Length: 291
Image (cartoon, rainbow, N blue to C red):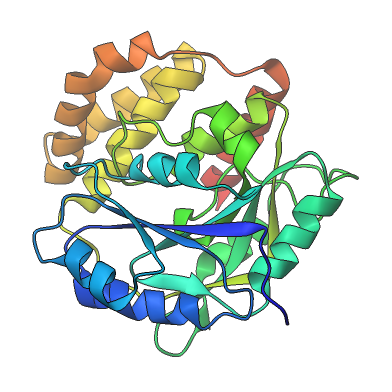
């Protein structure tokens, strides 16, 4: 395979220098030879210096503070290719997958974001999320190369740069943790398709287990997303469930406190989904509840 100039890989990182360097080695070995942009979210372990010394071909952006997921927005704005793929400092892409994704984006003009298949861990086992995406309850669209979805894993996605920027990228209020749903909603609201293509494959090698506080952040962000885009009844339902669980569940209590602190900002960003997208979101909700 010859180098493919269509896709830039954007990587966010925070204090994971050695993992990031391993990921950059993997990306450098891809036959597509994609340009790579690293957004260093205020690392204090010498990440930026190490990348500059060992991988001078990589562009490093240093915003000076930890932006979380919205750090990816900086990388997308810096990119000069029509498509952007995302990796974290513990993930990369299988050989040929970026070219396959670019071919699909070339072929399907309405495709805004492609949710890849995920291989996880040292044995590259299929991630359970693959089955969830493949079994999406949403109707198949004739102009999409796979099942339509309203969710994905951030480090296993390839997006049309123009669609991503039109949708606004990742919202700063969510920081990190379950931030993908809001972006999927916003892409769909602008008429872009989001679909799952299992033969485009990302490899994810997380270490250290679930980060402390992560489940609480994910519950907080699910409620914030509802307040920003869903009908009031759906948002109130999220909030009531957190309030009911809070007395006996420290994570729910933490999520509720975080939600209430950010609720005024969420209401200022409120933009209810178009009718068709809300109907799709309700189908996904119902399917998740049955599961």
